[in-house]
Amino acid sequence: MPDIGHNVSLRERARRIRRHALRMGEVQGQGYIAQALGVADVLSVSYFHALTYRPNEPEWEGRDRFCLSIGHYAIALYAALIEAGVIPEDEIESYGGDDSRLPMSGMAAYTPGMEITGGSLGHGLGIAVGMALGLKRKKSRNFVYNLFSDGELDEGSTWEAAMSAGSFGLDNLIGIVDVNNMQADGPSTQQLNFEPLKPKFEAFNWFAQRVDGNDIDALVAAFDQARNHPGQQPRIIICDTKMGRGVPFLEARERNHFLRVEADEWQKALDIIDAEPRQ
Amino acid sequence: MRRSKYIRPAWLDDASIERPNAKTSAMIASIAGPDQRTAPTPFGNALARLADSKPDIVGLSADLAKYTDLHIFAQKHPDRFYQMGMAEQLLMMASAGLAREGFQAWATTYAVFASRRAYDFICLAIAEENLDVKICCALPGLTTGYGPSHQATEDLAIFRGMPNLTIVDPCDAHEIEQAVSAIAAHKGPVYMRLLRGNVPLVLDEYGYNFELGKAKLLRDGDDTLIISCGLMTMRALEAADLLEKDNVSVAVLHVPTIKPLDEATISEEASKTGRPVVVTENHTVIGGLGEAVAGALLRGGVHPAGFRQIALPDQFLDAGALPTLHDQYGLSSSAVAASIKSWL
Image (cartoon, rainbow over all chains, first blue to last red; front, side, top):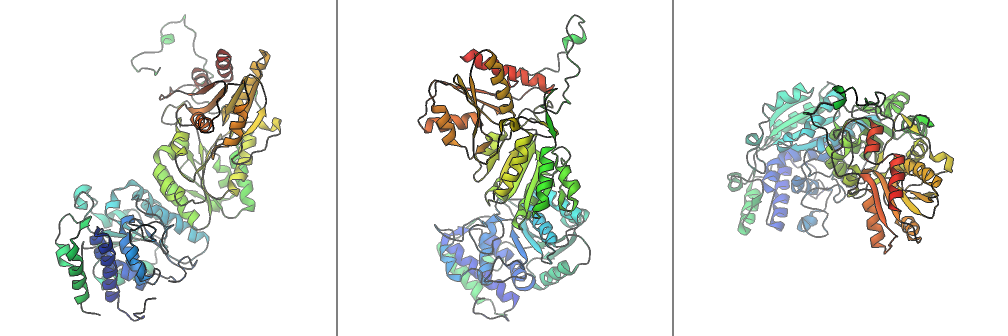
């Protein structure tokens, strides 16, 4: 674990995840930084409240599996894995470079703690279904988490996976959808309207919750409920998040799917994050 | 020539035209000839048997277990069989997930659905990760009369470009049984073309042993070298018998592993002087064994006396009865023999 100790609050973890992500963004001068800032609270609760894992043994059989279906969110997951002590912090400067373990799009073969290769969107949930079936075969009590995006709700394969998870009653599968309502061509609900989302998953036999994905307390309660729900059914946590969360001038930017940030703005963003009160 | 919905079959209105043989219908799913020795469900039997000693084996199908002979495995090992429904993308994703958790996943569907519909999932979720998934698909090439929706005439072309993927096209029941053990022992993704139901028995008479990645010379001859894979090896052997009666001496090199290709054996046989090479495959002329062999020979500086392909045309094929279609597209034994004779 990093040297900031074990009693760090989840808000502080989220703040530091945002900080790591901004520093990686600065290395390349651009990237999916708005998503990383938006999903940092979800990752903080995942890695510092919900998940069982060993930072020094990323392939430990007794770990919970965390699948990142959204390959381009790698910058966010690297930030969480750095904060969790799975990846050394000094690798930040290698982000997206030659010979780096931190490629721009997440791949299982490159990075400790990266369970699957995402990026061809719509793959993660189905792979997670297979892993959940596999864990049950092994009589494991671990969970499989799959983080996917609202854009991936457009993919038919996501719904094949959703229907099968409900059909198999996979109570060891926890889906997390990041609903930031922004995809490559614009607001997600204006591309294909996936709403109403919660009833859709409920109709597929999922235990569904919808929360403010930037509210740490709400997330903790939702993850606890998801893990402890008695029903023999998969669990989905629909997280409404804000792109660029925590850096107001980035939050305000329209069409922020792939952000170009001016050279002097990185430090301004880091200053804002650093000025947050420590909790 | 594709049939037209605007033209009624002439024999319906003209009694003087010979009626088609009602016994040859599009329902005929077997490639076995009427008097041919066959073995039932070789894939299902072999996998069910192998799973007795390999507890990591699981089987998955996308609503086609019965039609890919996987039901034999499912009946023997019901707790190790997963019905994924009619969802081929899910079939591949879930197989990847099970393989990630240490299981050897055997996924079955039809070749059209694996190659055309589920390609991205095989490529990224399975092959890029080099996961231990065996994709075994019925109805390869022209083995059904249902028309292009079911005829995987370009599956080899689609899959040959996929890194890490081993591709196997067995000839008969004997080889399928051996191939199941061999590909189970190979760690990594495999695509195998399946023959299902009552599958012809041909190669046991040749004392044949399947080895992954190896081409095998089944018979030698001086006038033509046939290089073949899959069921076309059976046709090549039959054609060679027919041609022998006309004093034409034909060698048959069977290449059941399309990728990686046994370029050394192919080059060695094709280098023998005076023999033109004829590559025959149950697949379109584009992107299959023929072009793979041609590329290997050119790269290796091997220039045989001639090079021909007996394969399916670059077309969407007709629906109809399988024997009729094999005659029509030149894949029947007599058609193969006639083609070779015409080229000598």
